[in-house]
Amino acid sequence: MKLLVTNIARIVGLRPADTERVCGAAMAELPELENAWLLAVDGRIAAYGPMTEPCTEPADRTVDAEGGMLFPSFCDSHTHLVYAGSREQEFLDKINGLSYEEIAKRGGGILNSADRLHETSENELYAQAMERVREIVAMGTGCVEIKSGYGLTTEDELKMLRVIRRIRETAPLEVRATFLGAHAVARGYVGRQAEYVDLVCREMIPAVAREGLADFVDVFCDQGFFTVEETERIMRAGAEYGLVPKIHANELAVSGGVQAGVRHGALSVDHLERMDEAAIEALRGTRTMPTMLPGAAFFLGMSYPPAREMIAAGLGVALASDYNPGSSPSGNMKTVVSLACIRMRMTPAEAINAATLNSAYAMGLSRDFGSITVGKVANFFLTKPMPSVAFFPYAYTTPVIRRVFLRGQEVA
Ligand code: NIG
Ligand code: FE
Image (cartoon, rainbow, N blue to C red; front, side, top):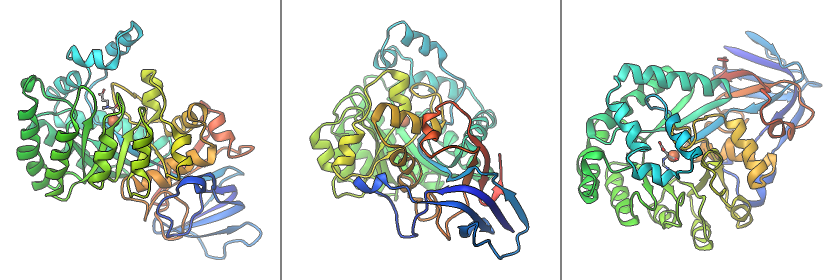
């Protein structure tokens, strides 16, 4: 199957095949080609060039971009989009003055979602999650990481991960799965946190590995949740089964979670609303991708991660949505890019790199996804005609994404 896209005002995010991520000052560059065509063959990018030198290959299908731009699909490297129901009651609690931690302490938050998930069948969970998947595909996401963590019992964690596997098998986008049994201490273990960590390490991780249900292991390493010591124990248990860590760190406090993640070779450390110089320093020269989730900072009214300081320190940074019912009930990556520009002073080029190539890296996928590169999977979207690339985050609620292609097929 040969798909030819013509009359593209600008192809955005062209990269050589060996660029696995972009760091520091290089994040400000977003290589482009004006007035171009692109050819995809059997789901991969085969060639591109200027309209002044048209494609000579005969195509099975030609799509006229009508002067819109072509972007690589977003890679959303941190979501919790498998969940049951919604939590707008807590939204009201927050409006009335309660904090995220206070809601959690009262048995709301993650435990509330765990109760609902327990009562929801696997089929129903899948149906609810697929609605969200269809929504994010239409908004330009082509790769997504999905976490468990609303099960909190072995059986329910496996249920969630099986739903993620089914999404992976049936949805048009690329999916990676993360086991997050240590998202909160399960209700039955309140006051017995060490025993819950035992359960995660001795029972859940081996069971998850036995069924091959996860690529990564995550821990909510933060004040009021899991300690650095517990996080390290869980990372070690995961490593025995080949699970690479991706850690929730420094959302509520300077928790030491960043350094712990780096020590254990985490692929990413995520959230980072509370950073200090030591945490930034710990990331320098490592393979760990600091990942920011400005949708959560926005929704919870928290301070934003220090993106400028991290980029100035030479780090690459990634952006993800954190799509979940408590702290970020949105998987809109275009809005995430806008928030990064508006609230963290990232340039449009930096934010787009962070939401495509660097977030692909944060899922171990940047060899095949995250940029317009010959040989990579043909995941891209076409926009309406726009005056410039900066218009994309600037017009922060305008639905400029017009057509979505995944693996060279039009899917939305
Ligand atoms: O990434 N911080 C921990 N976990 C999620 C929130 C989960 C929830 O509130 O349901 C997050 O923000
Ligand atoms: Fe999260």
